[in-house]
Length: 482
Image (cartoon, rainbow, N blue to C red; front, top):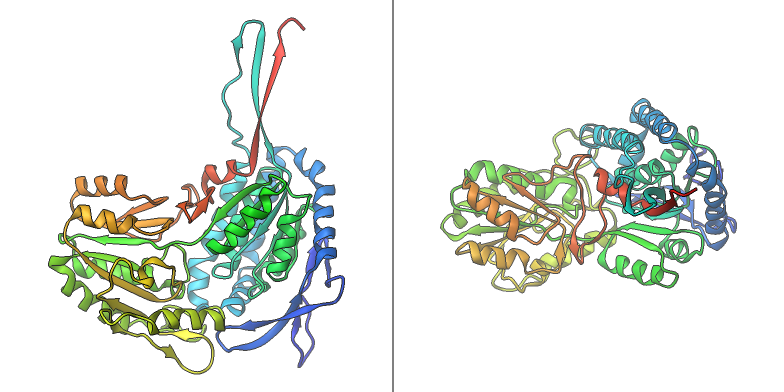
């Protein structure tokens, strides 16, 4: 990164151990969503830049592949320590990227990011496989777990720093090399990560190219990568899967979500509302696991809606340095228009109980919103809003709750709120989602997998399962006759 007084800061690609401009000099402006004003430029990378990054990663792969797990662990632990040492710099970059509250970025993102890197440092030394054995007379079989090769990775704009870590940490730990592209609206923290990581890893192991959808397409269609990994929309995931299919690349997709939050009549309403409001409005609802689709048993529906509307009215959004705000702006003007559009197009039978409007004229802020009276086939129920909007439906019994909860194309996360243990167990089995929380919603830990079914994609982030996704299995058989 570089800057001059009175001018936009200049972000650069990181390729083969050095920072570079785009080969053709093209750039795009980067806007702070809290102000709506440009603060930097970033390379609009084209084919030449992608070629250079892929070639660098390919050259570095044999050497990095042949390092020992202990060496890779040591490098990742150094990276985690460096993240802690540069925490305030990372916070500043992420806040400028996203407009998130400074305090929440410091407490809710830096600690898990560091912990996740350290987890994968440990995972590097746990290359598990079936035990060697003689499964045919006179022959011994062993299983090798190997890195897949060069990984093309595309991260989203809702958690640019954290999602960059979710991408590169397991890949690097497994012995792969990486070309990572951040979203075109949030490149700043990823470029800073390149500075940190690049000072520790051999050149070419970790590369960053910035750019738009075309840049991402060039990465996925490039002949060098053995694997493409993306966190993004369903549309983007389908495009990546289609492009990767042309040369049979492995694909890792973490896509959209429409998490059902099933609330039964035996809950403590106040506690449930507190947890659900926090999980629905956190990060302005820009989270694929956000608690934004609530189904409440009819006997407590009205009480729940009233309490949730009150909680929404008390939930503030605002500038990053305001310690009293719960979330920041939406990421970009298009996302603000998208969220507002869902509310503006509500059918006559729906009712806005709280919020439902933009906040201020500067930046992309939207009020915490609660909508009741919606029906299962309504647009706002079936499609991902990705904003601070919580809908509430009323259900009669457990069977209807399951039917409606599963009645969407997404299958990433869900939660059940009840004091009845047997019911919680039945629901956790019946809900067709990659994660089911019980009496909580949204916590994630490095040791447990994150990933969904159906149009939410396939593959896992975090956990040993996420690490395994960046490896391949080889069978080696040897004759005992020599």
